[in-house]
Image (tube, rainbow over all chains, first blue to last red; front, side, top):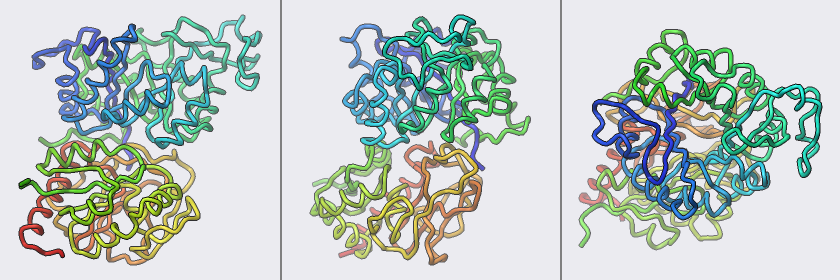
Length: 276
Length: 214
């Protein structure tokens, strides 16, 4: 039986993992290689590296990080952040990434999804969608200039797509964008609620379920995990195929082993800890 | 003189070969990704990987003149490992396209049944049914990483080495003589996946030492 995937997400800035990771048995908590190997041993089903390096001239550092990590860790590795073109994606895949995650660039140029899927196959194209619940004003529907009318918010819209870490509203309906991304050739969607992200109060289950039921490709839930029950809810009520989390793993409050045990006990198909 | 076994990874522009190469190197082999027919003929072992669409892949294989070398490798008796699309293309034809596949195995590549998420993406179990040197030592109930929308349906059931459940029981591994091919990605399946590459590299060393092929 296909198992639900548990995915730690690591933010990387200039080659260093940021957002304090606190483990006793890690010598250098900022070293992506060490953390990737640690999570692999803990039973992570995949890894996501998000490059949050702001300066473009430091971007190449991420290529080096991916090369080093993929030499040692043999589970799927997704890299996102700052990928703007087919050439950017190619460099990441050649460095050893298995999938690349597209966000802003895909919204600005949806053809990038189709081109990348044609070149490399859908299986390595993840579209990341940052969504936030619509306010009353949003749902009145003032299409932004340049937004495809088929994707624009309307009176039925419940979530809007944001970019730049939830700061920039795009005037695009998140559910419509999810379906469009799938149609264009995305192999998977990474859905983050900007309302619940960082809150540790649970995922936005309505958002997840609506998107997951609207597409036939897998959906990764993101944003809001504070305890193992939240992950269970995302997989169960939210109908997600995988769950991504950062803080609960990084701070060691709920190690992956504990989370997996909890999910398995509650009836979720889960891959057991790999044998040493 | 290079003492490590020389393994050719067939490069026909079907996806990322880096992780296959890294897994082989970790297991002690000298691995090169190549689309040179002669390099494939000279190699001690051949890995035939691949992700992507059947039609464009078969066209690339033919344009690059690789159909012959791939078939010769299989017939020569040297160890041959197909991965993902590298399993599917061993059959005759595919639901996914119109191009004839390699036709090493009688049978068709079919689309996974509707009613669940497609692609079948993630970790699933393989029920191994055959003893084969490349598939030995794998703990029962182990999980492997899958990403695919189609599956191989060989007519000859005696080559089916493993099956996996996803809405149906499909063939996830075949093996006979010098050939092993798997639908999952051993190079993405953690330590248990590396067992397959270790076994494969060992078999390459043994057949090279014994001069079994050529």
